[in-house]
Image (cartoon, rainbow, N blue to C red; front, top):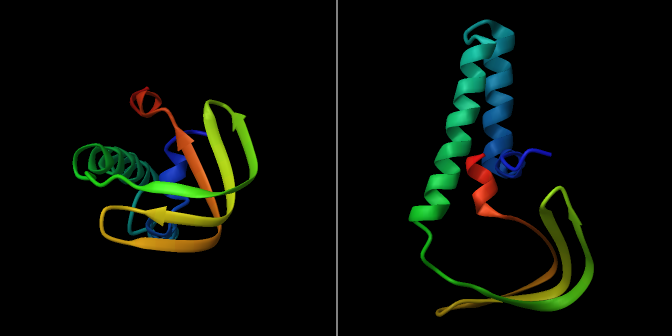
Length: 106
């Protein structure tokens, strides 16, 4: 799995992919241009996370499952608590996918 696929599986990434697929199918966009848009999306997401996100979050919960494959960690937590400086949220089940940010530039 390419590291950028993590962004593409988010809600906004899925919507973008579906829209580009429809545009390619209708002939209003070339497949090459659609690929360029996805590559730019990947770079924009990486840049935004690197430069605009300043908040830190503490996560606690029961670690149900963890795995490490292709330099990507996947954690599944149950009864997790997310806490930052201002708020605290409880979540019954959460999947966290983490990878080394240095791999994003390769």
